[in-house]
Length: 284
Image (cartoon, rainbow, N blue to C red):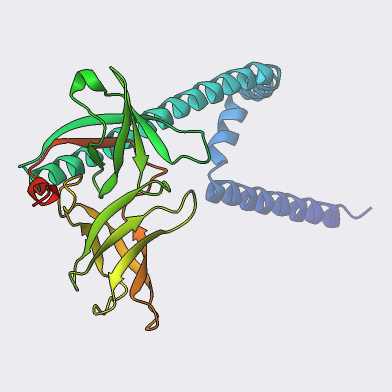
């Protein structure tokens, strides 16, 4: 047995171990784990206890999972209810804003003609009779409303009262077949009679003299003739003209300014100044 060669192998083996340990310590130091290894070497029981504690906490989290899920579901329910309450509140604010804007439009309309006396009323229903175009108001005889009074909204003429009780009134709309209103066109100043044609049908102006070149887009207002309506109440605009030179008069189709399905608040014109034409009805 060669003792010298064996000692040489031991020296090389020891050197390799030292180099390996040095490289290991260098790697641990560069990765930031050297301190942990040193702490473990100094106090191995503390390291084992920490590892065990981490695993115990993981198991505890798994066990408490259902409890956390229940809490999360409760929080979701609470947030859902809160969101629903905020949504309702937002809708109420939007509705209040819409009502405020409508009232401003109504009072702006009233300010344009301060010579008229008006009573504001809410629309509380529409007539269910398909043959009759009318709405119901929450004001009546006790509030000064009478049969024949004109009714307007913020956008224009709505119709005329034809039935009154002490605390309610029924209004025949412009679209009703019984409606006949003297009108005047804004540009040509031609006059005629506006008639309703029933549900879903357009308004038409009859008895327009052929001498007038009626144009699409002309504004249609009340003429004040007949003393049933004050003049210059907005009705709508001409959307079509039916003219035949072989006939004595022409007709026009009118798009009303008012959306009769969405009326909420109206003004009833209780008093206005009209031209007295009674003298012309007397026998000479």
